[in-house]
Every structure is written in C-alpha cells, then in structure tokens.
Length: 50
Image (cartoon, rainbow, N blue to C red; front, side, top):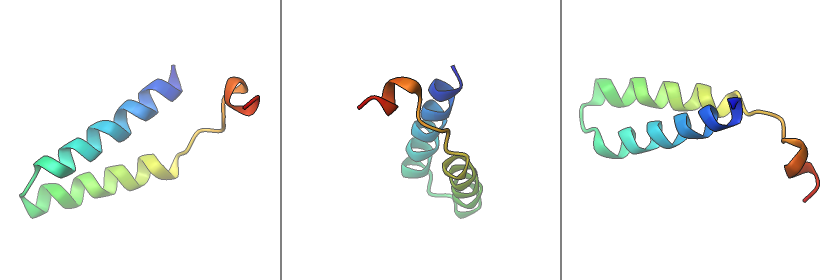
C-alpha cells in the first residue's frame, strides 16, 4: 500500500508541476516532489526477484 501511495504522489506532483505556471506554487510542488523522491522505498520482494 505504501508503494502505491508513493507512486501516486510522484505522478501527482509531476502532473501539477507541468500544469502550474505560478512560480510560488511551482517551488512548493518541486519541494514536495524532491521530498517524495528522496523517500524512495526499498524494492518490494517481487521487484527483487527480477
């Protein structure tokens, strides 16, 4: 479940970043995106088998 939320957050922040032109909002979204990317989850057991 955590992996799903993590991936959805990344998609959301990237989409918002592409759609937003307000520089203040873009800075906030970039910060959120960077934080989410920094909190990379360890690979799931299914991904380790690949």
